[in-house]
Image (cartoon, rainbow, N blue to C red; front, side, top):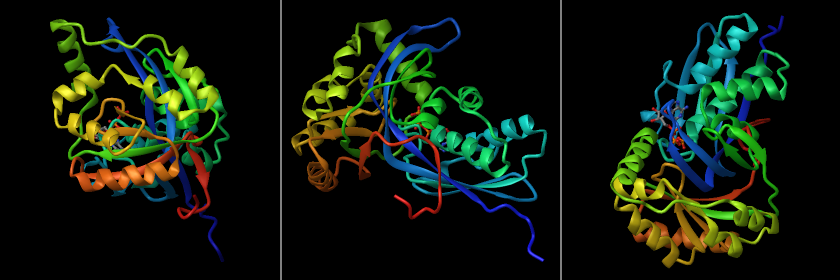
Length: 309
Ligand code: ATP
């Protein structure tokens, strides 16, 4: 007789780029007040969950060997949270296929956490609603609610209080992946140090940028991209200045450090321009590898198989 073991579930979750990342002063709780306009990009991770005798995590793909496979992995924590809610043991094998650079400022760990929540909700047939998933996501990390939702959104607080942003058209990006990562807390600490010594520029409001998104014009959007963490990331990895210069010299409309870096994201006029900029950057020797991507794309969602686009 056939056993009633449920089929594995695969969930795809997007990476993100911060189009606007304004960092306020350090709060008493150790976090900074943020205003972040996120866009979900097609560069993604796939997370597969299947019934098993015990909880396990396996990782393949982009820099897989530096990703922890124990309780430190956010998918492990997601499984424990949902199992507790469901009143069951987290006996599940979780397999992550990473396309998102690790410690790259593109929310790879958050994407996996969001994917694990959606996948386990489906595998265990929990029937969680959007509000439940959002609450678990916020407990796992500030970027996890956005990875769940996708699209284009503005986040405040630590980035976790989200509102959707109207965005017309697809935008085309080239991503320059760096050798090695940057730890997000180190980048915030470096920003605090730079601010104690002088006044690195601070971003203003995001109104004009939101207007450019609504119009859907990359030429209008390009000069409005901004990231308060960029001076800190450049201070910790000065070689990123060359990467940023090379991208605009290759024809990108603008280049920024993505989140806490070190990935650099280049906005291009269209898909063909992105391919051309990517090819030139790859040949310039200013980064480890290059990817093209488009956004906005949806948040974490069940897919039938990994060949789905
Ligand atoms: P963010 O943009 O949200 O600041 P990031 O993209 O810079 O994050 P991540 O790839 O999320 O960084 O990884 C940061 C650290 O989190 C890694 O160095 C790793 O030790 C840990 N980590 C935990 N779970 C995962 C996961 N599933 N994938 C990648 N890293 C993970």
